[in-house]
Image (tube, rainbow, N blue to C red; front, top):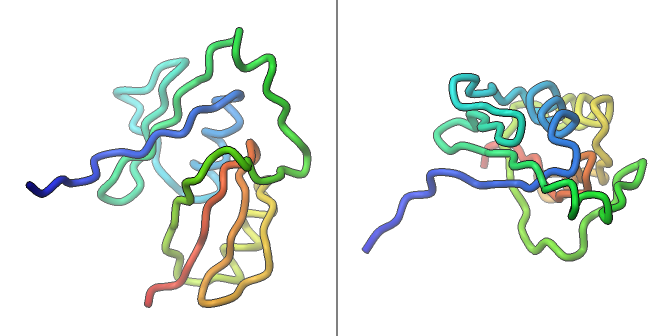
Length: 123
């Protein structure tokens, strides 16, 4: 059996803020025809990154730090390829990300809700 990754889903306390981050910060296009108030699919270049709103009764107990800190209970890291690591890092910081210093051809960061991701240049 061989599987193909179709989508990755991030659960969001503030789906509007997270949509702005992934749309404006990473340049992912919203797939508007399928987007709703609680579901926002984004074109991540052959794979969808979908944002799913956390129900209010659960979301109210989740604290979001500013600046963002990594969620320690989430063992997943999304990796995005960029052409210019330093320019992408600066752009993401301007859009609310917390970014580490680059090393090993990439740079780890946290989105505004603390989801860990990495930007890297092509190998």
